Length: 129
Image (tube, rainbow, N blue to C red; front, top):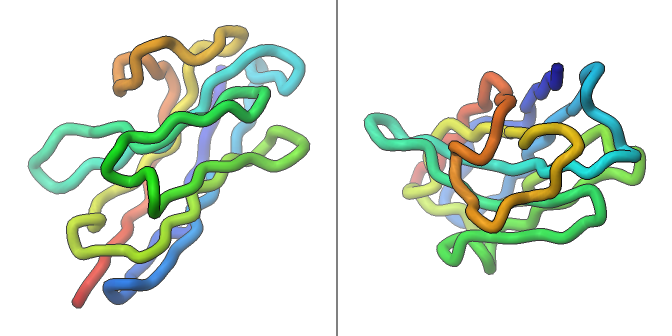
């Protein structure tokens, strides 16, 4: 299995920054095999939407609306993935989730929640004016 645990959420004023972290572990997850890790968010009453993803080799993909403000990265040991968020807006208020695709597989051509099999519990981000 794959376990994911997010941290780093909190309250911030508009224009501020936050860095979310996601610790990745599990018997099926290996830094030596292909993988795809992603960040999603879910506003209250809305569906979970994709934000950014990264694969084992560091290739990234972003949705257009956050491309210039959010940056996904991972540590050298491939045990953590991060989401650096800057110039935050009230519309960024949501629960943020880290997710993993099936271990051993690269990211798919599509990028949505159904492409990911394992999920963390989420971390809340609240942006106020």
